[in-house]
Length: 135
Image (cartoon, rainbow, N blue to C red):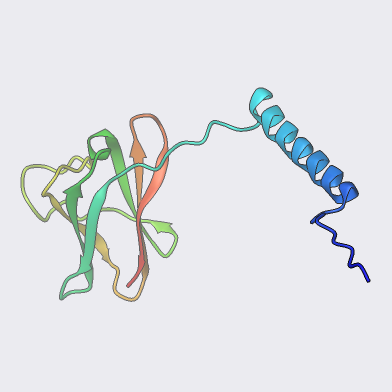
């Protein structure tokens, strides 16, 4: 009695289907790049900031630095989805709404128990959330 041995792992039909599928996917990726469907994606800005709540429930923002901090033109505090302002009376040296490393800013509204977000505008016109936390 002789045993027939079959070394084929995949039938030729399945192999052809896989080759066609790979070709179609490769053509779609190349077409996306050629026709400009991919691109225009901006990278994230890098800004270091810490936020704490002080004993009176107001926010204390400490600017740490970051590669893109020098390009910030405006920072808006947002509490529970509503744009707020900074407490400009605390601190010294004049308030410009453009942070520098080591500065400490205070919110004009309490943030304890609230969703607190910092939205920054940069010199290139882009906006980005640089902090987002529920206190």
